[in-house]
Image 1 (cartoon, rainbow, N blue to C red):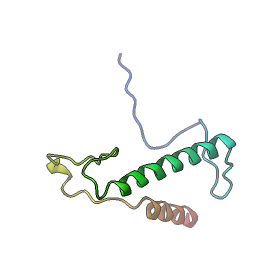
Image 2 (image 1 turned 120 degrees about the horizontal axis):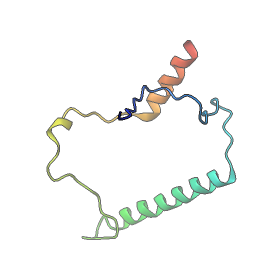
Image 3 (image 1 turned 45 degrees about the vertical axis):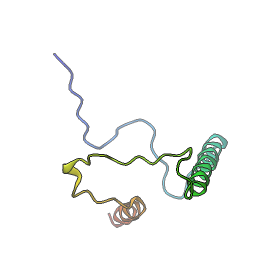
Image 4 (image 1 turned 120 degrees about the vertical axis):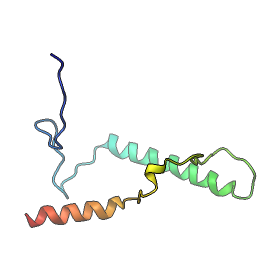
Length: 92
């Protein structure tokens, strides 16, 4: 018989995320954050510097034929969603 994996949104076992406010940032984590931040600063600088020029190092991807089923898609503010989830968790 074939196994079927069903994801119900709940994780059992495995590493748990720390409670809010008790996060421990390891040196490796901080190094990763610094690396990504600095790399992104370079991307933004390149974007700004090529505003006047025709072509540069950074290329923005734009869908040529947008998917019709995504017409109703509205971007989600992840920060707002996290705040609401945190408030809901405190209520229960």
